[in-house]
Length: 468
View (cartoon, rainbow, N blue to C red):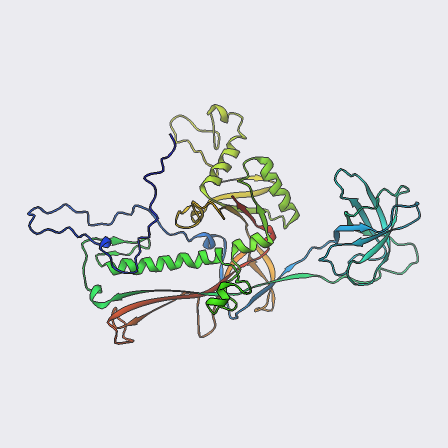
């Protein structure tokens, strides 16, 4: 029998903006002589309700003292163009062939006279290739052209509109001049801006002195019989979660958007992890990769990117089970149930039906991501569901604008605003005239929270997001 639709999990928020009758017992009857047997301690029916932990596991935090964070990432070392068009048909052996680099992103060609190149026809089903020497190049400008003299007597490449050309070396005759021209290193520059996050909790001074019959507790260990302590601690825990989930989900506001028109945030938003990976990284769609062939396609994509040796897969429950089933299927005795996991189970030990990782070309470690499972957050979504995120482990070299030099940074890290006089990593302060504060005549305690931060996703081409 499948799980029934009712009863299901509750999504009604426990936190309320005002004190309602549902927060308290209201059936006191002094005409009843019998005292009810009550459980004083609050039962934690949802376990640990916080979802933050991801960035603490894979990233770091460091200060920044600017409204804009910029960094540079290395470009490719070698030269290859994929969208090349032949401008003349293949002719006699000694007749060179003219190619136009049709890629709209290429403003000037990096191929020089004397370099040796390989040319491949990308037409479906074609096996035509040639190798030759570049004999002429056009001036800098849009759609640069090169002229190639072939080594082969048979000029195979036809008048194709989809050729790849890459440089593999050079060759010069005796007594000739050296290479004409030089190449400058090319970096790609990226930036992000921090966002300000705020929250607060208020309680009247009289309510702070009111004892309750329920002994409350929270995930950070707060306990006692004062209800406001629970609400204040839960506000703090909720704000801690938002510090992480905002870095995951943030998006920049577009021109003429409602954010810019209605809120006064002319440059609102920030580049969150999901936004960056969806736009500059690798996206897997159409369900989870459940076979080795599926993962082989991911690995082949990683080969074309940074080829980071170790990677961590942060996945939801379904994706985690799919990986476990895929790895279990590699055991030839798995179908019979005789072995699993480390393949040394016996009848008196608990059967371990899960795997923590595997190696296939690269090392992949698997970790459950609570944020993707929690039904009050990403869990149980249909549209826009994310099943997992592949994050490269380790660090990368970048040019830090603040330090003015190359520095090692984790692929994921958070920059918070700070200076010698102001640290906005995590600010909290109390105002009012209760709870030890004496800043106003209002008989209230207000706890304020503030942070200003942004996440930097370096080398987004090495990340993979798995969408449903």
